[in-house]
Structures are given as structure tokens and as C-alpha cells.
Image (tube, rainbow, N blue to C red):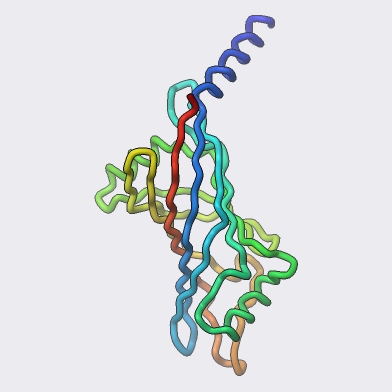
Length: 194
């Protein structure tokens, strides 16, 4: 029993000694269709950070990273539409949209993107909107690495109905479509522990 505890302790020490950290930012764009015309909107996530670790096989793993986008800062270029959007999201009670990714094998994702003809890789995330959380399949692409900096794009569709959101309408007949395409551009600084 003591030997097993010592082994677990050594693994934890070794793993944490190889830990690193990422610090990042992202810009978000969303593309919306409506019965009148399509439009786009933008947002920016709050700066975020997360620890990376090396698993016993030596792979770099990101146990968890949380990215939050303030609803009040999401803009479409139309004040009236922005107000309706904030009401739909109930931004007074739910001020952020939160995306969480867990247990990401960063080496595997990079390798998948390098091997794919279009430079893409699937990435599962959990998206929380107005108190409703759903698992979403996203696609990572456009990986660029320069020293300790890397950037990539992330894209995924969102169904308003799946998050119990009722699309705003104007004059009762101009309505936003259920599906919204979300695109994020991420910039990360990666550091390794000494």
C-alpha cells in the first residue's frame, strides 16, 4: 500500500514538474440568417489562462480551459438588434456565454490538423448559454505556430432552440433563423514550467 501511494505521489510530482501554462485571447464572429437579410456580429472573449500537464506517456494535455464572452459586448452594428439580442440572452442575469474544453490532448489535435488535407481537427466543447449547457462539436483549423505563440480558428454551429432561446422577431414576420454559425480566432502564449 505504501509503495502504491509513493508511486502515485511521484507521478503527481513528475507531472506537475512538466506542467506549463497557456494564456490567450480570442475574437468571435457570428453569422446569422434572417427572413430579411443575413448579418454578422462580433464579440471578444475575456483573457483566459489554463495549466497544461504531461501525462505518463509524455503527451501534453490541457485538463480544462474556460473561455467567456461578455454578452453586453457582442455587437451587430444595429443598436435595436443588439438590445433584442441582449434581452434574448437575458444578459442582466446571464452576463457571459461560456465555452469549456476538457482533457484536450494538444499533441493529438496538432497532429490531426497537420495530417488533414484541409488542416482541420474536431474538438469537443461544452457551451453554456443562459444557464443551459450543451456539448458541441467544433472544428479547429488554420493552426499557426511561431515559437511560444500559436493561433488557430474554431468554428461551430449553434441552434437557438437547443439552448431554449427564442429568436427575436421584428414586426412579427422578420425572424432570425435557428442556426447561427460561430467562428473564433484564438491567439495563445504557451509557457513551460522551469
